[in-house]
Structures are given as C-alpha cells and as structure tokens.
Amino acid sequence: VGSADKKNDIYQHKFQCITVCHAGAAFTLRTLHRQRPIHQILCHMESAHLKSFARDKAVRRWCRANNVPIKEFDQTGVTRCLSSRDDFSNNFNKFLDRPIPEHPTSEQLKEMRQRLINIDAEGIRLHGRCEMPMKPSDMQEIPVEHRNDRIHRQYGGEGKGLDLLQSFLSRRGANYSSGISSPNTSWTTGSRLSPYLTWGHISLRHVIVMTKRRQEELHAAKKASSAPSPWLRSLSSFQSRMHWRSHFMQKLESQPTMEVQDQCSAFSHLRRQPNDFCQEYYDAWCQGRTGFPFVDACMRSLIHCGWLNFRMRAMLVSFATYNLWLDWKRIAGHLARVFLDYEPGIHYPQLQMQAGTTGINAMRVYNVTKQGIDQDPSGVFIRKYVPELRNVPNEFIHEPQNMPVGTQKKCNVIIGNERDEVRSTRLGFQPIKQSTSDKHEEADANDSVYYPSPIVDEKASAKIAKDKLAAVRKQESTRAEAQQVYLKHGSRKTRGADRDGVKPKALSSTVKRVKVDKGQTSLLNSWKSSPRKQQNGSVQNPIELHHDEQEQSTFMDVNDNEAKASTMSSPSMTQFLSQKEASNTSKLKTADWNCQVCTYLNEKPLALACSMCGSVRQ
Image 1 (cartoon, rainbow, N blue to C red):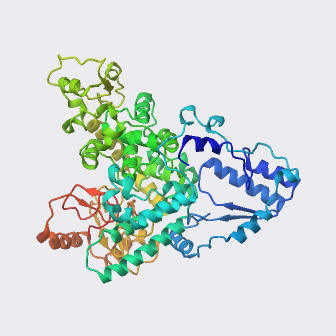
Image 2: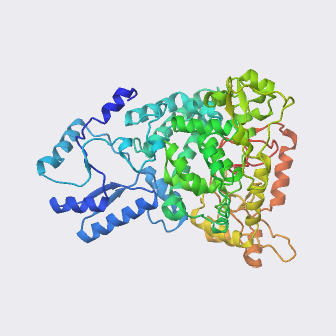
Image 3: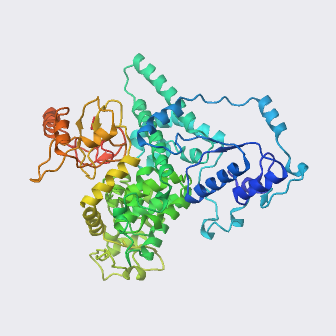
C-alpha cells in the first residue's frame, strides 16, 4: 500500500478472520470464556515491556484458575526462565535446527477458515471490540505529534519482507560489510529486514536458513572460480548480527526491570542529580536542531522514514548521554516512537550499553563531527535532511559555525539566533560561539534561514562525561557488581570459529587478547582462574575472560593459589603481545582498517583488535 487513497481505504476495511478488542487481555478472555468455553490458548512468546510482562502473568493466572492450557511459540530463540546464561547458545542452536513448517496449502487454509467462529453469528459480545482498524488519531495513548504517518517509511506485509530478503541475498548484500556503517550506503547494502522481523511479518529462522543456503551456494562457486568476492564476508557478518539480535533480547527476558533500572547500579546516580536534565538540550536533540549537522541529519531521517543504520543510532545515543548528559531513560521513549523497528529486547540493553551503565562494556563516546567527516565526507546525507545547509560549501558542511558571515549570506543561512545565546551551563562549559573573521557584517534575516550554533562544546562535554563515568568504573565495588552482570548477561561465545579460546578483558577501552586452554569448560572455573592483584600491585598472569560480540567482561579477584594454577595452562599477555608485534613488524599498516566482524572503521592502524567489538584483527 503506497498511495494516500489506499491507506485511507484500510480504515474502511472490516476485519474478516480476526477479532480485535481494545481492552485488557485477561478481562477479554474471561468475558469470552463465559459465553463460549476456551479449550486452549496458542500465542506468540513476547519479550517486551514490564506492562506486557504483567499482562502475561495475569493471563497465566487466569489460565491456571480456569484450567485452560496455554502454549507459547518461540519466534526469536529466546528462552523463558533461563537458569544460566551458559545454556543460551545451545538453546538458540536447537531453535535454529527445528524444521521450518511448510506453507499451508489452499485446502488447509480453506479448512482452517471453516473452523473459525463467527462472533456475530454466535451472538458473542465483547467489550472494546473493533470491527475496523483504529486510526492513530483515535488512540489517545499516542502523543499528538506522533499520530501522523511517515510517507517514506517501509510498508508492511509478508510479501514485501520476502522480496526485500531476496533482493538482499541476490544483489544488495554483496557490500554489506563495507557499506553498513554509512547512512548513505546502508539503505541499499543493509538488509532493512528489522521492521519485518519486529512486526512478525517474516521469521528469524527463515532469514537465517535462507542466508545459510546462499552461503553454501557462494562456497561452491568459490571453489569453481578464483575471482575475489565480498559476498561471503558480508553474509558472515550479517549472520552474526542475526544471532546478536536474539542475544540482546534474552537480556531483557532474563531481567525485565532493565527497562527502568541500570544493569550495574553503581552508575544509577549519574545523569540523575538535580539540574542534570536540560529540557532545552532534550528538545533540540529530539527535533534535530543541536547545531551538529550530522547528528541533526540522523535524527531527522529517523523522524522522516523510521529507519537508520546501527552505527548512527549508537552515535545519537552517545551524543545524548555523554555530550548532553541526558538520562538514557529520558530518551528511550522518543527513540522508541521514531524507530519503525522498535524492539524492546534490543532497545533497552543497547541504550544502557551505549550510555555506559552496564559495567561490562567499554565507554562508547562518538566524536560526532569526525563521524560525519568519515561517513558523509561530501555532506550528501546532511544536505538531504538538513536543507538549511544545502548551499554550504563542503569545507564548512560539518562545522557551519566556522563559516564567515559573508559566506553565510551567500549560502542564505544564518548560523545561530537570539535564543542560541542563552544556553544552560549546567555541565560546566559554554556553548561554542560562531567563529567569523568579519563579525561586523550582518546577514539579512529576510533572505536567509536559521540553523542553530552548536548547543555544547563537543570535546569539553565529552571529557567531563567520560571523567564522571571513569571515576565510577575504577571503584572496586563497581568491578564486583560488574562481575555479576557478566554472569547474568554476558555471552559465553567468542566472535567466530577461528577465535577458539580467545577471551577479552573488561572495563577497558583497549582490548587485547590471549589464548587460553581449549579444555576449559566451566564458566565458574574461568572466573576462578582470573588473576589477583597482589599487595605490591603486580598481577599474576592476566588471562582474558569470555565475552560476546559487543561486550568486554571484567576481571575477578580470587585467591593466589587459583591464580597460580591458571599460569600452568596459558601463555602470558606479555608473550602474546610480543609474538603478535613481531609477526606484524614486517607488514606495518598506516591506514585505518575495517573490522571483519562488526565492520567498524578503526582509527588506530597498528591496533591488534577492534576497539568497538574486541575481535582479533585478521
């Protein structure tokens, strides 16, 4: 459905095969059961908000009280009541190994329709029953500003989702690894399947199975031809993100309070002190009027079409929580509304990870100006979504506040206005003032549009925020709590089959790795074999611990005997680094490099591991 007329027709269409009630789930089931007994409930297993969690518990209580069996169908590989994170990968693999049901035949569909109960014919009355789709304007729960549709969003339907998957696997996905980081290329090279997965239009297993089949075809073709191809690398990266999706959803399933509480409570006081929250900063961020062109373009594109690549989403959260010092809980609602693919199980764990409140992740503070220069060097994306800057030369497109007033007049844009002169200084720094060589000139406001000057000093605000978080991270109590967070939520799997036994060091933005004994099977033993910091400050044989695709776990203090025992089974960090450096001496690289796993563009040419995900450099 694309035209406005067709969209309006939807609201005139009466439901034929489904019954929709705008009422409480348990109340509706009770009302229905009184009029026609329910023999069994089949439902989709959902990992979502605390409200939906409370709803599910209420429905189960009702089912137990009325002896009605209920069966949930897993769609994501998430395990209910997971007793140990050690079991997640095995459970997920079993989920993937299940056979995919065949598409029902026309005869089966006909038979199913004949079994459906006609509510009207049976005389069943249900409170809040909707005979037609509800218009957003009729839903009082939706804020007024979000009741309008977005004309450039993706449109739903199983057919559209399958077509998108097919085009990705056959044409668009070849440059997935190299193109996913930039908003200019990710719309084409990215799969953009997330809305269809979130809304249940296509299944995760189908996507993974079809991708595996495509990988098998490519492996066979590679044996027959020596021509290089980016396909295998790209699809491998895509598959890892499919697994990563369920990994994060499992976190919210295991700890539903993550929606309202920090994973590591040691950080709970940050950004929540009196006067920490600045409404002006929040409004500017939500509207895409921060004075940082790349940030504003990313936010406006989200408002416009509802989709943005992962790196830019992370940058928006980083800018809000570090530079603007906004609480991640305050920004969660706005992002949830603008994300067309909003998935609570990814949303809240990611918000906390980007805000640095998990205790087991490195601080991810993006230099938004540099990100713009790297990902949108010519300002194509900026000019598309920030039309005020469409005439600005490339040399000023990322920092328009540096434009001389004379150049502003030529570009028909005025940087800053009267309101920009009154800024909050609650974080201890002043906003950047526009730097011009001819301030005596005055631009004609009648012929120009306004674009705000930067609302904060990017470098100063980032430094203050990092110092505050670093002070908390250094505390022993924080490290002890982070250990428990890892045990509950950290992945037990390294990135890639060729990284056997490689484990990272947490609470550090500099990730280096060593190899450990492959015979290590117990997670508890891996914690116990960690080094202990001795009285003299020396550390016995650092052994790096398990981590996941985006996480870095923390060291745990144990007794000296256990630390000495671990020395017998693993080489030291010093030996590993010296060997690695020696092997790379003859082939030093002087350029930035892309991580083969997460595609992050690393700025340190000699780094041994990715500074984003921690994967060993290939």
